[in-house]
Structure formats: C-alpha cells, structure tokens
Length: 326
Image 1: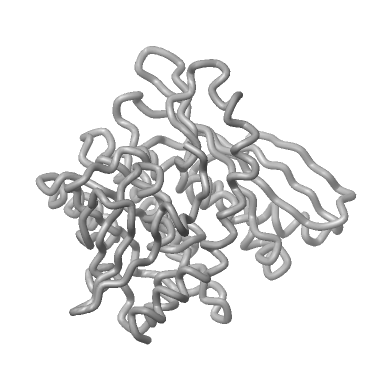
Image 2: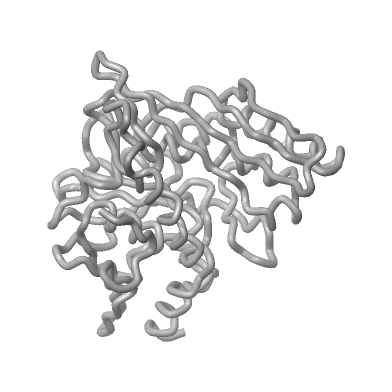
C-alpha cells in the first residue's frame, strides 16, 4: 500500500470518524464544565483534573464500550471496560484508585459474562470496582465505567502541553496478540501477562510524570496511533511531522492494520529532546518499546513521511478528529 492510500484508509477509519460528533455534546456543556472553578483542564484530555487543594488533584474519567464488542464477546467487553479506564488515568501520570459502572442487560448470561470480565480486570490491574447502577430489564446490553485517580497538581501529563520543537514518542508493548483475529482491532498485551508487569507499566508512566519528563501525552485509543496523536495535537494547537518507519510495529502486521489497532498498553508522548532517552529507558524496562518518531511543528497539520514521500493526514481547520469550538 502506498503512502497516500495508507493515509486515506486512516482518514476513513471508523475509529477516527466516530469522534467527530463529540462536539455536539461538549458544546452544550461549555458554560458549566468549570462551574466550580476547580477544573484544571478543558475537554480533550484522557481524564478531567479537579483541584482538591494541597497540590493534589482528582483525575476523573469514563468510558463506554462499543455495542459491537459486547455482542461479539461480553466477557471481553467487561474486561476492556476496566482496561480502557485504567489506561486513561495512567496516560495522565496518575494512580488509579477505584471504579463504578452502569450495567444494562437484556439477559442473565450477558450479565454474568460482563461482570466476570470486569472482575478479572480488577484483579489484573488491582483497581477495585466499588459500586454503580444496574438495569436488569434493558432492551440491549451496555456497559459504561467511570474511574477516579489521584496525582500531584504539578506532575500530571496533559494532552494540551505539547510545544513546538518537542519530539514525538510512540510507546507500545509489542509482545501481544490479536484478541479478535477477524477485525484485528484489539492488540491484547495485558490479559495473558503477569499481573505485576501490567501494573508496573502503569507505574512507569507515573514515574516519568513525577520526574516531569514528558510535555504532553495520551493513551492510544480507538482512533489508532495517528488518530490519537492528532487528538493530542488539536488539544495543544500544534502540528507534527511523523516518520512512518520509526513507529514501533510487529514486523508481520501490515501498516494499514497496525496504525488502527487499540493496544492494551500504548501511549503517545511529547518531550524535549534532552528528556527522550530517559523516557525510553524507563518504559522499555517494562516491555514498552518506545521510539522517537517525529517532531512537533507550528503548522496545525499532521504529516506522515516515508522515504521520499510526505503526505498530509489531518489539517485542524479542515478535517480535525475532534471538532471542538475553542
């Protein structure tokens, strides 16, 4: 696949295009999102940050699971509802504390499988599920989870702090497997791993946050590697130029598949050049292959380069991933 065709497939990827409608919700909430005056970050980060004093913040996030995944495998949907929320707190450099859920089901079998998946996820990441709400008579099956975490106010990793001249790093656990070999969208790196390693990967992100090594960061989510990077760039009002061949990848997986996967452990980071080696050293100790893949630029455009080709993927004033009114 040539570079232009690859870029077109990313632009048309459902994991990217389904993000466009978020603004229909956030635009309504603009006048009240910081009604308390204690919210530190705007929409677009992996978690909200609420100032509770004494240089401490509460990180607060929520995720719902795609209905297609629940229909395909309710147990895995339950497990992923824990995974994605823990990663949102980890991406901010925080410590996950506890979760609650809203479960809606139309049959007992789906209920049991979803909850068994949630239970295993809690055991894997050592984060408790402390409550929630249950609809036993719903018309369809649905699971949403909210999570809280904690962090020091001056040591969080936000999506909105990337600076022109910073390097872009991609960090992914390559030791994984496709959970669903048909769609190949979920690169599982956690389910079969030792619990301690999985938990240590979260702590490693916290460590680089505490040492203030990254300028910005985000966990790789449904829009894939480049779609997630674009969301970070939009939050920071900058662009980037990325070298395709520098992105960590499993050798036997084609680029048009790999760039769309949701990895069990995968992060986009930006950092001053002098901090990159230390970040790489910390993360690779815990099976997170990490490379410098490009640089932040002033133009609000995401470019992808390969050999002598350079193609524009996203331009914030024309085809952004998130359509937020600043």
